[in-house]
Length: 61
Image (cartoon, rainbow, N blue to C red; front, top):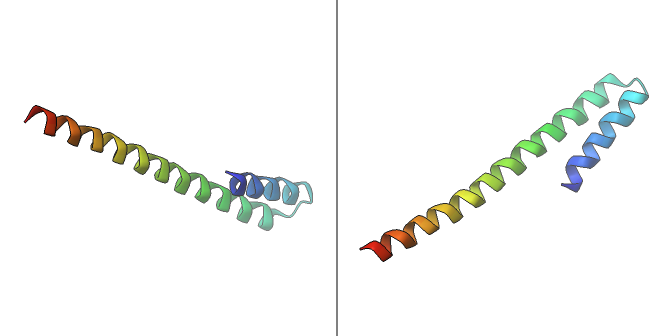
């Protein structure tokens, strides 16, 4: 999460300097980091959920 906030900070700092290119680049990096973090969290929770499903199936057999 720290990397996300760093990119958000870079984007805001660049925006305050009227550096649109740097601000936009940092914003896109922040969004990409948000997306990859969300995917990772979803994958972890999905694996845990499917693991519980597997346990349930083995118990019910």
